[in-house]
Length: 533
Image (cartoon, rainbow, N blue to C red; front, side):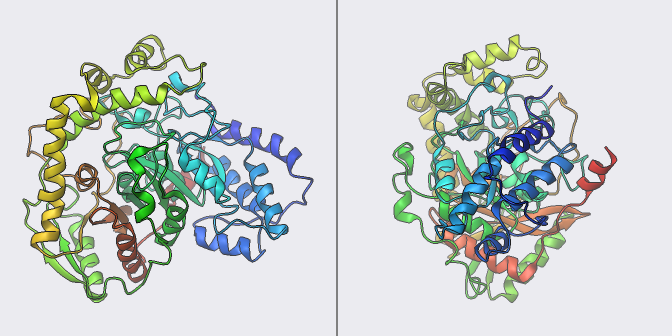
């Protein structure tokens, strides 16, 4: 039995919050399906709708449609109270800004007071944080309604080398475009929830592609930003060398609105010291003419570029050319397959970074180290059914980022990904950004336990194309994906990669492409599945 499935959570929300809404009159129903965050914000500002009505509409959708998807682990017990507080602010002329009253779901590795942060594991169900993560704190300060927690691949996917969809706490995640297909990982719940309109926006985290993959497969806008434009304090880590949080939205404008609230320096994350100096107003940076006169590098040697995706990628290139962009083909050997180096970096980092996070967990949480997690998994029958090869391999290493072997691997991978990888495109070919297929359409979801179906698998070097998002993670540079089209009804994303701190530029390019292509199509398959249950 899962921790708190949406139906139970919704019933709790309704019973608690209906008694706490100052006896407000019932608001008229509001159809939130595939409505942009920016439109909801405008309707709230114009007084056409209340946050309470919007929040209730999302709760109703979760209640009605999430059963077969398992996108949402829990709805916040005070969600409607938060909405009522926003409505009072607006009534008193004290609205905070464009996100005031906007419901947002957080991936369940992000701390938010009032709900446990489980990272998908039963070892963490008592992890009720004493304070918000910096991401949550900033969203609350902007007036957003923290609607609840989205499902995730357990421990952000770095557990087993076998297939394991979703988590033990939240159940197996399913793709809303085709429930037999993978929803990728590890921000799969956030991706499903955004695609199926369970919130105006969601927040995921990304180590090597965990925002990029679900965003591409769900027809969403997602980005892994520069390290650390967005603070990681209060987020269950994998690898602080590569971890980032970020919005997952249905439009570029919505993403920019969220990033405006989330970006910035935080003393609790020393890596973010330069963020304030580089953040900007990302909404103001958007322009439909942003591609005009820009020189972009085209990279085709990716796992996602194949006979199925080539036609829509070629069409996307034609759209950008029509927008005034100059396109330059880049050599196939521009990027190196760094998957094995990346896996070892995560192994060294997770042992060190997880212990630092768990040291601040409440006393009810009995695990404090990676070894404790491994022991819990062996002892708990809900967890012992899954392997933990990645965790055990990480536990066997020592020294963290101070280990000379780690430093050797990191120096090589960071150099090959940055200056000698993406950086080579900028210097040798004079391009301002690189474009590529984000990844191919969703594969068929393999049954849990299928050998070789997991993430971060060891393979002989060079036997797979370089990962667009994985190399960006090692470079610590931004990678944006926007909807590019579909293959037999399954979405595929278009990636833009730029130098460090180029988020505003990449968003402007993505916005210009989005406005010219209108490539996103919302999912429908999940409705039939829910109605048949």
